[in-house]
Image (cartoon, rainbow, N blue to C red; front, side, top):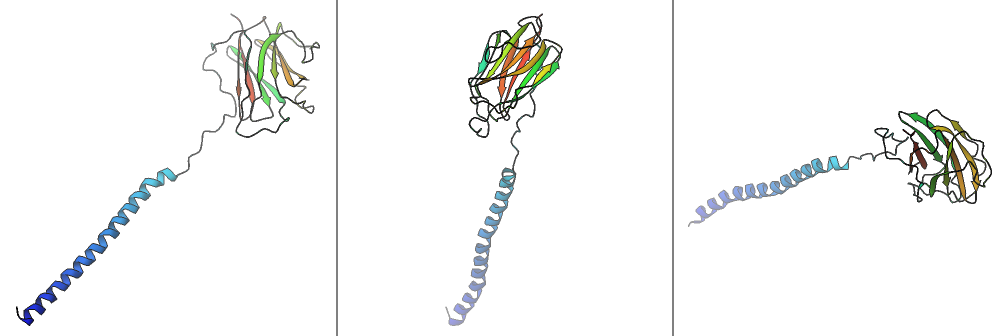
Length: 211
């Protein structure tokens, strides 16, 4: 091959090499750009914050009034809330009564996020130390909450009167590590169910009339 032919061949090859080089350098960038866009589309929904289920602000009512209930003693262990409760600061802060179709609900509010150990049982109409309590009713449910420390006068003088199976409910004070609420029922020992809720701390008693 002559010098002139070799030079012509080289001149023709240079544009082809440059074109190939440009094409090769664009492809990775194009691929990276495509992957980046795909990643952005994939991660955007996952990075959107979702709100967690909020704690109920009040207690859900049973779907129907014939929920399981009897007259046996009930209770539960201590349950922690979402935040630590200062030692010795938990007390009964109030009681609420609400009449529903076929039952009455009593809610004992606590000054805590958690719930101490508690019991509910039928007893005589007496206070925490054994003294008599003036309360309406034919039988009496005693709710004992193991708060562990004597409250500073808070939540010890609450009383509620209601139609239906609950005649009256009242806080009766503190004795030896426990605060108590007494519930007077109409018609003798009527069926009940009880459970605890946290955040805030509450003890719920549903009372059904007999028959």
